[in-house]
Length: 144
Image 1 (cartoon, rainbow, N blue to C red):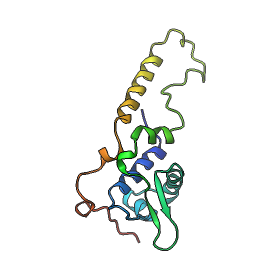
Image 2: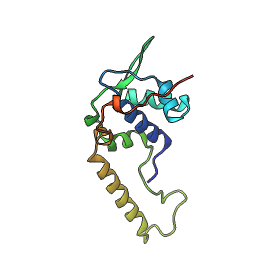
Image 3: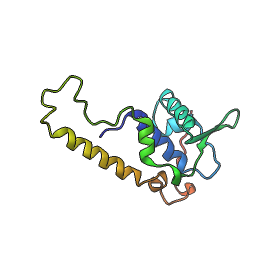
Image 4: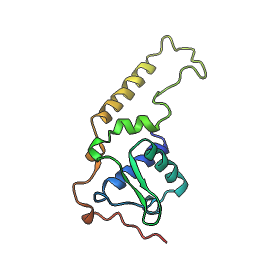
């Protein structure tokens, strides 16, 4: 299963913010520079993450974004389900498949997809974060 760029970027943002000290705000520009990703792409994902309750944003001078929930309460499968438009591994209807009634592949692919999501349901953002405090792992990138 390949995740969309939007889901990938959502995870990158969550991972970045999850490594910040509690209450510290991040700037979208800095996150974009850190990952080398377009600000337009990240901004759209940040808006969606905020609407879904994963992030809190503070407007104005000195504002930014931070996690709205603890990393241990952010389930990885839920993030995937919130960002992926479809989790179906195949579409046998478009174009219509002539062997759909006898094909064993569809069932196997759905079984594998369900196993993937079940594995992700057992993990949270906290499981992905390094054990070191942010002071020991530098996320800082010079932005010009």
